[in-house]
Image 1 (cartoon, rainbow, N blue to C red):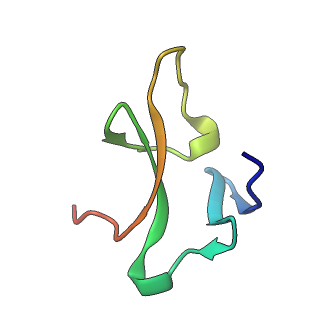
Image 2: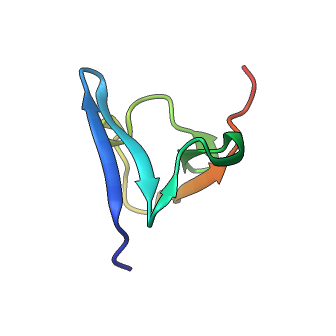
Image 3: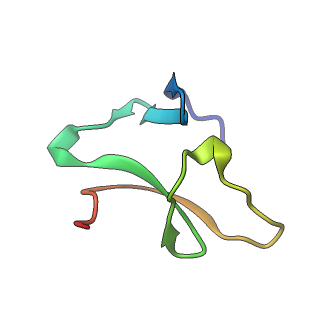
Length: 65
C-alpha cells in the first residue's frame, strides 16, 4: 500500500503523527506500533525487527501504565 505518513523527528527518534490522513488525537486515539503483540517501547525507527516478526500499527486510545 502507498500510505501518506506525517512524521516529526525528535532526539529519541521519529514520531508518527498521521497515517493516510488519520491524525493523532482524534477521539483521544494515537498511532502506536506493536511487534509480536507487544507495544513498542522505543521510537519506531529505533526498533530492531527480525524476519518473521509481526508488526502492526494500531489507532487506539493508549493503554494505561
